Every structure is written in C-alpha cells, then in structure tokens.
Image (cartoon, rainbow, N blue to C red; front, top):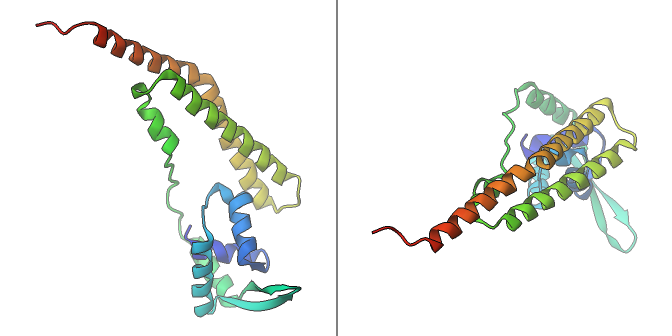
Length: 188
C-alpha cells in the first residue's frame, strides 16, 4: 500500500497529527506492513492536502509550536474507497536475516547461532508488543490484523526454534571441511 493511501486509511479512523500517524505505523498494528518515515509521511500529507483529500488545522500548544491536525475530506474518503477496491500487490518478504542465513556455511557456527538467537529474541519481543495491543480497544479489523501478525511471528519463532540445530550443524560441518582442506596438502 502506498503511503498516501495509508495516510488516508489512518485518517479515516479519526483526525491525527503527522507524529500520531508515524507512531501508529511504527508501534501499532500498522507496523506489520509499513515502514513509513516522517520523511515520507509529511510529503504525502502535503500532496493529499494539495489534492483536497485532506485538510489541516493548527492547534495551539503551551510553550510549543502549533501542531498540525489532519482530517479526511469527503473527497479523501472517496479516494480511499477507490484505492481499496484495487487488488493489493503480493506480499514482499525481503529479509537481510534470510540473506545472511543463505550464506551461513561461510561463517563460523557460533555466528550462525548468534544470528538465530538474536532473531528468536526479536520475534519474542514482537509477539509481546503485539499481544499488548490486544489489551486496548480496537475494531474487529484491527484485531484481525494484530492476531494475524502474532500468528506469523509465532510461526517464524517455532520454525527457528525447531530448525536451528540443523542449520548450526551444517555450518559446523562446512567449517570442519574447510579445516580439513587446509590441513591436507593438495595432491600433485
């Protein structure tokens, strides 16, 4: 989903500041499918305002600059509906972790163990964070998205826990073969 549609969707839930939108994307259920930054959110909101899809009003704050609160217009609601009628692109699963694991036989088994253990901790932390979101009030759709995220994190965690031994073993075997080749002079 492009950042403009994401902003329209968030604003369909209620008025929000750019900071609140970023927080929802970074920490809320939206973190499961977006990595939008301030550097992409604010330009998107500016374009949406230019197109008349979003309005902005300034709210005074004590001893701080006014904050900008964005609202969805009727035209914005219509654009969101049109955007959501399109089929979503297939999910993308790009992972630096998986790229590193693909070549794990080129590093020490200890490094492979560290990579897997660090990833296990990341999954455990994400599960706890997502389960924490379930404690608050949310729409049925938001609950579905969070529970889906929990299920995917748990599946990845279970897979790592059950397969880490074979992967570390393969790295150890590769390291042993490399030592054997170094110790054995090449036949002439």
